[in-house]
Length: 542
Image 1 (spheres, rainbow, N blue to C red):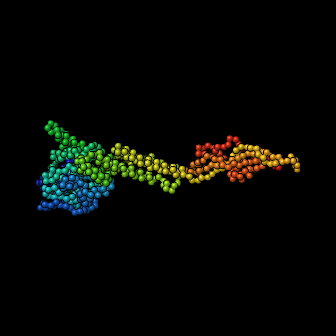
Image 2: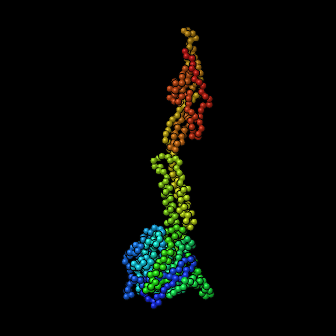
Image 3: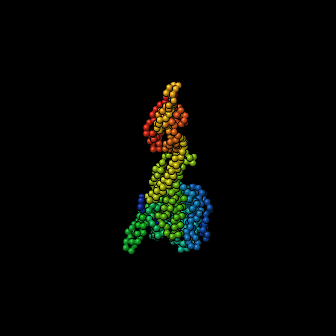
């Protein structure tokens, strides 16, 4: 990331007598094609030299890529100079789906940043950002404009207030916010490239490091495009490489350290020049400038994931909030706010809702057998959707949160379903007649003779049976539970009694054919009497 590099948005009207053709300069770092470009010095639409008021463009300008409007993003309170984000700019940015590419224009005041930014957005259709032709600053804070990107998604242009202006404020918060949310920084100077431009970039980086605490690892990759606007010199293709040579020693060793810091901060650095508008190659160089921005302004990514406009807004909100409250921006806190709160947690919430939706509805009071446990599949879905993120600790924390949520959902469902399954669906009573014992009883009286003599008792062994009952309960989950067998009434069976009489006396299942080994809750057979009942003998009749 980089910090303080000041910005201003109007190109001076001063015309150099040498409107020389800007030649391509070489590229430092990774192989990139150099391009010399021309940014508008005093493009069509600038205010008259006699005007002392800044030119404010129409609310909307129609371009080849559609209508676009300049809206405020970052402004400062007049009393305490505290930064605050404008609702209009936040709403415009938050409405953008991914991918979102953000280019920031920084540089000296009155060097033509706003005109250059307008030309990038509208071509030659007019000005989007306000400009002026006096020494007073025009842009305060950051304005933005949104247009469709050249490939996919949206292109957001940040036009920032200028630095090094003795008549205006120099505020590090502008560079910090602009660079935090962008992937390409366009650093603009007027006339020619000098040591002051590198020092201004170095000061911005130093201010960024001062305001941002903690590790910067994982933040959006930064690229730098150095632009000389209104260039009146010819630069060789190797000029950029020579300018960044770390060959200064002794009392000038700080210059080598400055160059090393800049190269560490940006993964790509490119240099282009822009002649004055009356130069014959002006349109060609402007096209080259637009091509350089198109090639190197990539979508905003954080931890390997492309951010939406809403996620960029949350990152800016967190940074400005921390800056106002503590005077510094803890980078891990900002990135956690974006990655965990606004990227991982929505994923966790969505997967949790899917698990809840997949659970059967138990409001009907019916037991659901063989419900599929989808927790493992949900965690696999989370792993697939988050595998591209590089913040392993935040991903692991979000995964634990997801696991805890779906565990609670599943355990609550399983407990409720089990409780429903234990409810009674059907209750019946079963009977069993069992042999109890035998005893001698008088079953008749007989005379010794057919017609004479005193009657004597006829004694016969009688089997005594007992009726046992138990309750059979069928649960909603299909399990059958039985109560203990309990004795009920006693039934006597004499020799003169038959089985039908016995059954009529008990009103239950047949004694000669008891229930077949009923199941108990433990899976064993019902208790039986120790000895099997003897057969029912008929006693002699009188």
